[in-house]
Image (cartoon, rainbow, N blue to C red; front, side):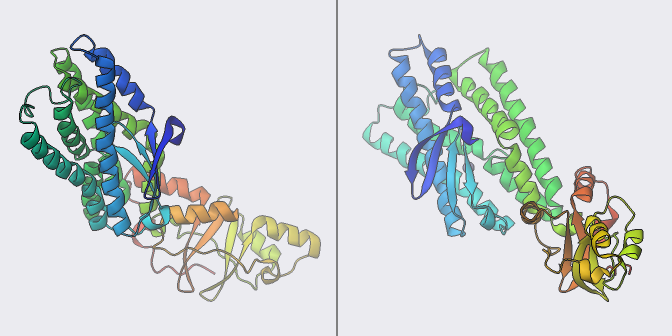
Length: 381
Ligand SMILES: [Zn+2]
């Protein structure tokens, strides 16, 4: 996303960037409106600035609402119909449905307030401007377009099409009754249907045509861009933030005892998918050892005990943590396995090998036996 944008302004510590599709939209408006009136180039440029202003105000609304919920927005990329905010990841993780909905509503709310304010001002000070005449957005009536740009941005963003605000609200509502992954996936597919519908609807009527339909069609294109190309990583991130460790951890795994000899342990650790093993005394987790470590220790020092070869320093995850947090930790540590611990009690493990399998199972909505019974498993000794 950043690659396709240029920095324009810093406001309240937020870096605002403009996406390349803004100049592209300027060219489209200019070409399509040329011949309808005087100075189409300059007027199209000002019209694009009015839309940019509406998107900027919209994003400031989100940023203020996010800040009030303790989330710092670091940078925003402005697209012709909406912005994409890069929120502080750490804080975003704890976001509940109610706060997500209030942050999502703040952007369209600012646009509506501005539309009412600007519309009323124009009616009072320049009554000759016809606010309700078609086309609403046109380079040849800029005061009218100033008001309608705000309404246009508000209305489009309220469509239930993820990653737009309406789609975020929809996802938050869906996620209340189901799991987060399928809620996000449903919100995304509804978004794709909407973008296609807008595009086709705009295109069909455009053949007819007033320039309003051009805007509807362009909105479809940009929504499609936002939903399909630019935000894929964001959608993935959103999914990962919402999957809990307990949903993907494996509860069927091999543990070793510190009193095992390395030769015995290696014999028990034959199954290939698991490379690293939790070492458990009673029900307490005391260390971690990999197959490679056991083999090396055997070669160097002969057949000792697991206790002397295991690592006592290791990372653990809680069952309620987000998968994104755990993946960051796995990435940094270079470990192949993270034990999932509730209290001192080992309840599961997360490995790269089983992670992909579990995520696929979740996304296909196949019931996995590990999701429901993950709380009280005593690993075999
Ligand atoms: Zn928004």
